[in-house]
Length: 563
Image (cartoon, rainbow, N blue to C red):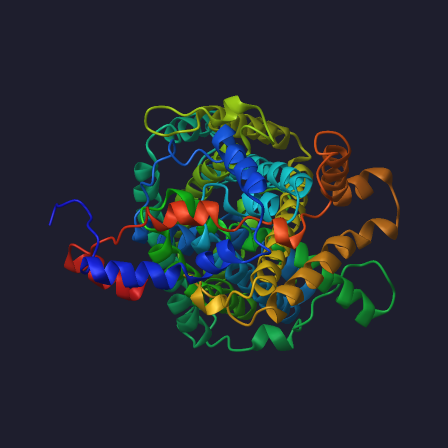
């Protein structure tokens, strides 16, 4: 109690454990196909110059912090509000199928990231993995794309915060609330990372309890506890399970399929952030303990938070409910609030609205945190060295300021076209997220190729991803297809503005990759040869750094068992 963490077991036990975990490292360093000394030295210099400043950011996140960040990190605007659009277009069954399908992709991505992030837990994780395992240019493009992903999500959360408060009062204009919370969230990100972890821990706990409470409430309403009596599958019979469709073609079945395709972009936005476990690994006090636990429980979270809640929402809210497409109020279109109101519970809408407010504030806080850490990981080679400067508390302050500055885009939502701007920002964020996921899986495929080429058994890794390599190739191909077809609607009535709204992030990624490859990295290969990939130098540093984190209280023991 109260003592500093210490290594468990005897000295000989430690040696046995270390030797077991280092089997793959030893075989790599003695293998004739290992990277040259000059290449490893250049990579070490690359990290020392600023791409990863492991000595500056603080490992202040405990195991329960990392687990809860992963648990609550994806519960936000996308789930509470973003599910209204697919429900109104695709219907309850098609929406459920779309989210189940995307859930399998999300699980595959977290498995891939988990294997790499436990092997080499560094700040910025998969952005650095793309640099190490694929090429400098891909790492450059991925890093900037992922940073933009979180930066552009921040104004979405600011706009949502103002809309949630407007549910109660319009005494203060929306821009006023956005300005207030802009500065509050900016200030919050200058506190040490342990503060961030503790705040996110408790807010995420509230999120989880709210979702569990909603599922129990919804089950009671479906069984007849509400004013409408037993609901059952009433709305799946009338108006029906499939939804009206996208409204683009005359054939009803084809149009419904197009409606299902359109729901995938909302699913992408909703699941965004599920990879944050790997990103936060660099600031975990014991990543090889915390990250595997968080990764292994992702499937339960997907089933409970997304699939289960969407199933009950589809039972309680008909797809033709006019509130789903209400243009006058953004937050009133939340299927959660609609289902509660339709069931006749008077006090609960205000309580749930307060929970949504807390959730969205938490999401905005996470946007700045993740964006600033991504920018920090780019410092030195993919971005100016100043992006790696930190405060005494280990806060990358330039990254925090620049990421938060993008939040000023939220003020575009103040106009009458606010919902249009919101949809535009959601599309930008979702497509950036899909590109990032593709790069995560692509880096993992290369990582597995390196291991196989050097005869290294994946069972020797700190964490072995499930169902590989099939699972990685499945998500890699599926995500690429979705990324290219997600903007199909713009081709039915083509306009340049609609085309760029749907594909600007893909175009920007290609430009960043090609531009950097032809200029900054013109002397580097388009794809690093397998024999030159360095998977050892950083992993050895982590092997010497990881400490067991003791469970000091009964609360933590219970928490460790459940979550």
